Length: 205
Image (cartoon, rainbow, N blue to C red):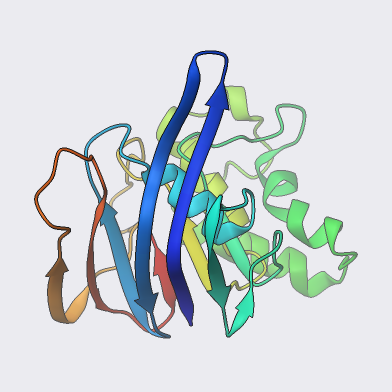
């Protein structure tokens, strides 16, 4: 479903160029959970932004479903490191934002939003504003918002370290099935590596 072919990304600044990614080749099919691992600054966030269509590779191409990624897609959601909630909107209104942007104001959207909020252990906080929530609770609201449109692919950029859990709730999917580790050749370049396992939907983190 997702293909990266010779993907490189460079950033230019006053002191020269910085090569964040170099020659990345990767494929991930439907039903895979793929984790990109690496030290800080190795290009993990940049890689996710390229897949999401929020940035353009300097070289190479990114494909999703056999088509080149040229910009943001409706079937791909991103959960960033920071919740990025709108401070003047309540929990429910923040979760409903994707439905409003797409013009979907049906009662079904509200029902789905309330169901996601409850599933994340946030029942009773629907009318609270972001500043009234802990950092972990804010991140769970952001996860609800990402899931509103039932994306085929969910890109998650280190979302769970801040996510406190209530008893009986789980913010992250449980991985099961065959697992494998894919690591780049040893070099001084801080290139990220990936780990993958089976999952019934396309999740990336």
